[in-house]
Amino acid sequence: MFNMKLIVSTAMLATALTGCGGSSSSSSSPSEPTPQPFSFSEATVASVHAAILSGEKTCEDIVQGYIDRIEAYDFSIEGPELTSVVAINPDAINQAIEFDLNFPVTGIDKPLSCIPILPKDNINTAEMPTTGGATAFEFNQPTSDAYIINGLRNAGAIVIGKANQDELAFGFVGRSSVRGLVKNAYDHSKGAGGSSSGTGAAIGASLAVFGLGTDTGGSIRVPSSLGGLVGIRPSLRLLSLDGVMPLATFQDTAGPMCRTVEDCALAMDAMVGFDPGAYSNQRSRFDIDAPLISTGGEYQAVTGIPATYTAFLDKDGLKGARIGVVRSLFGNGNGDNGIMQAVLNEALDKMREAGAVVEDVVIPDQSTILSRYASLSGLEFARDLQEYLQSWTSDMDGHLRTYQAFQDSGGYLSNNTNTIRNRNNIGEDLSENATYLRNTVERPAYVRPRLMQTLDNIDNAGRPAGEPYDVLLYPTLQNLAGSLGGNPSAGSANRLSPFSGFPTLTLPAGMAGADHGVDPALPVGMEMLAREFDEATLIRIAYAFQETAKPRQAPVHYPELVAEEEDQ
Image (cartoon, rainbow, N blue to C red; front, side):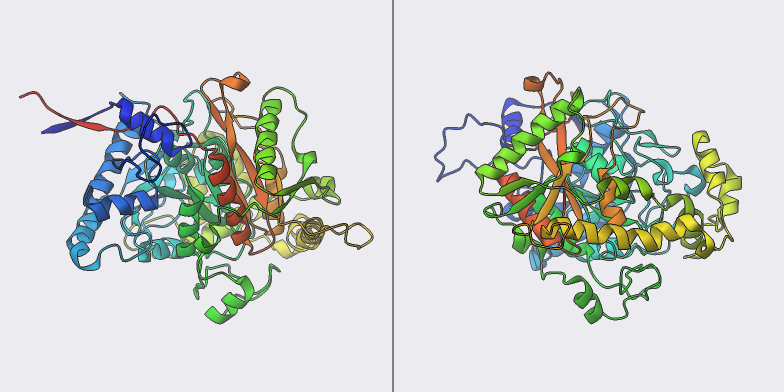
């Protein structure tokens, strides 16, 4: 018999540090690198596949290893009890064993073969309930996977469990009535952000290879920043919303949260695609009343998705890249904001050194964009949630099917009671609601052209002011991680993407550590915004920066688990 002990060896720690940009004392020649044993900490799709192909690990070893890490670091009261995972998939091991049985014939035949992933618990999975973090939905068992989960499974991924979240995706704190409050992977006295809190903390702590979040107004990007992750909020309409519990359908999207850009590129390949179903939200135009895309050919014509996003993993991708820095979104420079700015400015210097053109820009009417318009979650939530609850039969699971029944159940945090009651506008004709019209009709027509003007480098007279920019860049958050149970200082920059539908990617700019008077060190994220459906450019620039700067450092609380034989 064996027990899993929380032991980290000097060699394992050196390996982990080397993998995240630290130094190694190895004297091996660069032309003959010393083979490193597989490490669950900071593992990537490539390292999992290499371990399986070499015979070092089976798929069952990989999946069981991550389950062991979840049990040791997330569920055990003797450990840090990160509280990032809601449940483990009871069928995950069987899926791994099936892969192993087929491996002698098939080998690694899919891009995500045997890759354990953790989706947020508002994304449907056929073998586990989807709760949205609310006890009212604790036994909601959809009859099929979400469209994007099906795509990931077809690419070979194994859903290892479901990640905790802010209940119903309300906010940036990370607390649900199903599992409680998520801790920050780097400092357990700090918050993990939200609403994709559990995904951010779990992937930051290497409890799976990558995860999925959803983002209505910052819910992928905020926890990714606080977890030292790459998080992509794709262009609206690019990914199907079928099987995703909604907050505000006109702004909602899912997206990957990963430790590396290349893993996010692989995830995007599996998640994109035309969904002919009625719940895809893949409209043929951005207009809210536009008809759904009707064919795969039309989807390709609208989105222009590449054959693979991995084609844009270019180490030289910063050479000649043009980056517009929105200084007005950086903050006042006081306290933690000053530390954040220092780390970001160091990152911008590294971009320049790698060949990028980095210039300050001004978004026309930025203050109006960020103050006149608002999230639609207060108006769309009740209608969209009820439609979601009625999208599968309750004959098997007996789940609640109306918003009123949900409200009456009381199966949610008490501090959400007023919000749930106040959002119950079932039966209201939103076409007569001035706020709704301002944020569905006026807002896109106002925001999208002004962001395009900035990206295209056009002055207010309509004349070119220079070469266009590839991306706009600004901080993901205004400050470092806040106290556990409190809201992080998110600022308002996170509104630019949901208000426009343009894609954004957040990635680590670097670490705020001893040089900044911060202990333990905390990650600082920066966000880049690109043109609609231009995720490829985000991936190219982010990958080049990752390879140039090696900005991610692993949190210190989650070493390798080592099996020790029990005393007989």
